[in-house]
Amino acid sequence: MSEDRKLLQPLTGIVSVTLRILLGTLVAGFLLSLFVDGVHWGRGDMCVTADWTGTSGSDFQPYETLPGAGVNYTPTFCPVEATGTNWQQFLGVMRTAPVTVLLIGGLYLLDRLLRLAAREGVHTSGTAARLRVLGWWLLLGSLVVETAASVAGGLLLGTLTDDEVADAAWAQLWSAPYLAVLTGLGLLTFARIVGASARMRDELDAVV
Image (cartoon, rainbow, N blue to C red; front, side, top):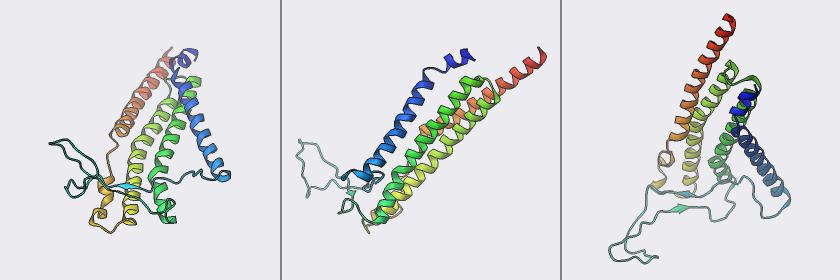
């Protein structure tokens, strides 16, 4: 298994260190928020930028432009009070927390995959199964996270304005997580390849 362990470096070490640093940062931020005034942990993003609307009218010109140039103004809606209401705080957290959960969960699954692959071997059914789990986590998780964040953003915008810009805002805020989806599909395909190689290896071992 020493060859497999060398094969997985330096990724194994990088993922392990990154996961521990991220978890340590989250724990430190939470503890500081309990004992230090002015440190806010897990508040989320309570401002919504409506980048699908705006104006380029000539009545409002806070910026000077050169001849032939114009400025578009995109509104960003925020609570007057920095803390907002409890409902706004919850929606703000729901816009950012799912991304953190997806990231930490993905790093944990990847760290576990690499450590067990280094111990048991790369071409095993266990490695294929863990690759499959990681692939589904990225594929489905990215879609769920993007949907949750966009719905929360739409609801938050509805608490900040009654303008028509808030109508079906979640659809405007939603964007397809192409990279995560393609990465998840790639991992699922690679899991099938590793599974096939593991079965071939078992068959060869049985023959020998």
